[in-house]
Image 1 (cartoon, one colour):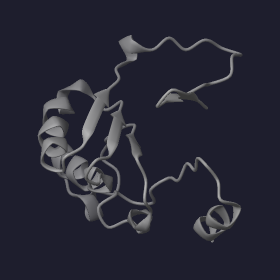
Image 2: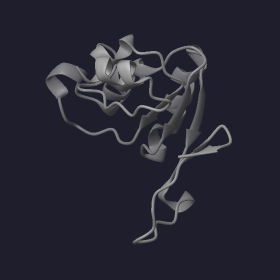
Image 3: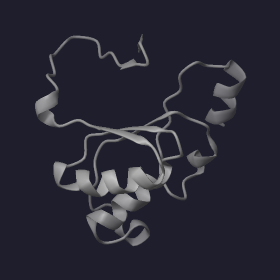
Length: 117
């Protein structure tokens, strides 16, 4: 329903959360330029696998050729992500906790392709 609503409204930007994993998720029918993977953990192991790499592989299933990926996953997984992203092909930006400074009571802004959201 939400996808139809946003299509009807002709929005410029839509943020859609993947339901389970990524590879087989219904959101893969959408056309998008930017994907965000925030963390990889041992949840939904029955569906996604029992190693961080297998869970990451499933989550990386959201990537499409030409996409941009921003990730805040544990740096131990960065090389694994880079290998997968290279085969799509897509681009990737890894952000660690040392890269950001969170200040309370300020609005969150995202800059993408010279636009601030």
